[in-house]
Image (cartoon, rainbow, N blue to C red):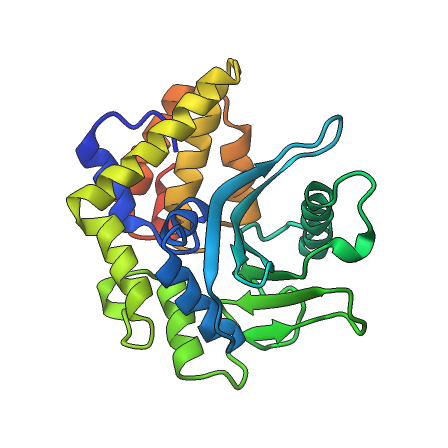
Length: 279
């Protein structure tokens, strides 16, 4: 998240985070009960999770590596992959395709038959209805069975989905006490722990520090600049939709001092529009 100076500053950031943050949603879903609850709400199926990895990196020699927001396995050997897709201009379907190919490559050892590949459930959470279906939850876009189930959970489209799903959409977009619901008590409990309880806040602070340290260890001279870019974007995404022009402006900024100023401005801003008007 960046070189954030004090515990109190980190705490303010954490309390502003929404479940649209890949960093935050990954930490929330480290909790088995919260993950199983959300899986049931979206799929209407019960899962018993036995292993969870968040921000799980699959390294590919000589090709593009991926970091998966949530990677889990249940008692039936099924793989569950959950990805928070924030970018408005990303090619989402091709990203889906590439993530799955990396998972399959990591799962299948040399000489092992293809039918040994486990079933995969992939859930892609998006801020934009890029499939144009006008539905909150879209199941399987494929017309054949290959052991893969794709679910697209769109946070903006309403369609015929009301009640529980609509409540869950609102809570993901604006993860505040006002949007809590009795329909997902375990998710709410986990969020409250990470945002407001001392041990939970400390866990989140460790995540921020780890990201910063990993940037240093990779030996990138611009590691600090890159971290501040990420920090600015993370805060602004929790205030609203980031226009492509603003995201490009942030990514092109090379001055660490300027990015630090933008970070503190984002912390004070009540909306993306307010931030834009002051930079």
